[in-house]
Image (tube, rainbow, N blue to C red; front, side, top):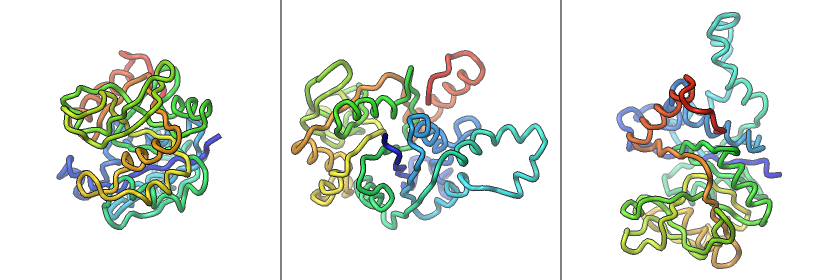
Amino acid sequence: MIQKCLFLVAGLGTRFLPATKAMPKEMMPVLDKPLVQYGVEEALIAGMSEICFVTGRNKRAIEDHFDDNVELDIHVKDTAREEALSGIRELMSKCKFSYTRQAQMLGPGHAVKLGQILTGDQPFGVVLSDDLCFGTERNVLRQLLDVHQKYGCSVVAVQEVPRDVSDRYGIVAGEFLEDGVVDVTSLVEKPAPASAPSNLGIVGRYILTPEIYDALDRIEPGVSGEYQLTDAIDVLAKEQRVLACQFKGKRFDCGSLDGFVAATNYCYRMRFGKLPVPEC
């Protein structure tokens, strides 16, 4: 069973300025819970209890969130507010947290490479907290893990996206191996709509095997002058099997204002009984 999950949380969150000038974008709350906590809950439910973060400057709030606050604990003890901390306390008791820092913003591929010191020589999960995902019967990471356990290879989460926004996503090409599982032949980071090889866009959930590190060493800076994880997985797909899982559930791009508002409304409706509660 895969135990480690890597969270890429070093980004500057420029799409949400000025809110993210001093606050990590991953700490922005959907209702009363920060985005990053939803992701850690998803990882734990999927069986990953060793949570690894690649952080950056001004991200200390994430580390503090998953640590004790003695003064706060004393203040809310035996009050109605104490129950609000039950979820984060459960995560703290069941998970181990580790951190390393990305000093320069050189892209998600660079961040994953830095995370090797935390994940080691074993398969691991990857979560981008901007993507808030809710599965149906099983959460999205669990669905990817099921595919990985069946085929023993790297797996990326995908969903159908409109072709006219393909330049916002990594796009996969390949043939369906079974219902919801694509045998990937290539991946392209943010292609123009006219050249997109499919309408299957990559979502911020991955299961990666350790061979990804060698692939990361062999790529050059790509889109935006950054080392793109998509480019490294494309190298991997040309040498060994890589699969894409068209997951069952919902995903919100909380890096955009529209997606963040939609996620907040969705969670509000779940909280107050207007929607069934899926796995996060």
